[in-house]
Image (tube, rainbow, N blue to C red):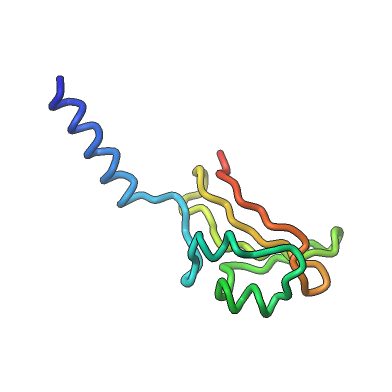
Amino acid sequence: MILIVVIAIVASIVRQMLFRSTVYSVEYDESRFQQVRVGQTSKEVEALMGPPLTKVPWPDQGIVNWSYTAKRFGYSNYWKRSVFMENDKVDHVSSMYWID
């Protein structure tokens, strides 16, 4: 019984290492992401975090979504980390686990 539990744990760890569902921007660091604050300029955020994976304008809301993560597969759960810019300043920060 113990052997089965050990095999299941090892298989889970290997799966997580090989098939991580979250893609991160090149310079991403969670502790630095937690330092992003409302009101910071886009230059301050890029100096802290580096460039995001994508910058997607949402014209109907007047903001730009800076995504620092993406899902690796078409349908998968992943850590979603975004900074929303309005008038070149942080409007809000989103940090969540997206369940797809």
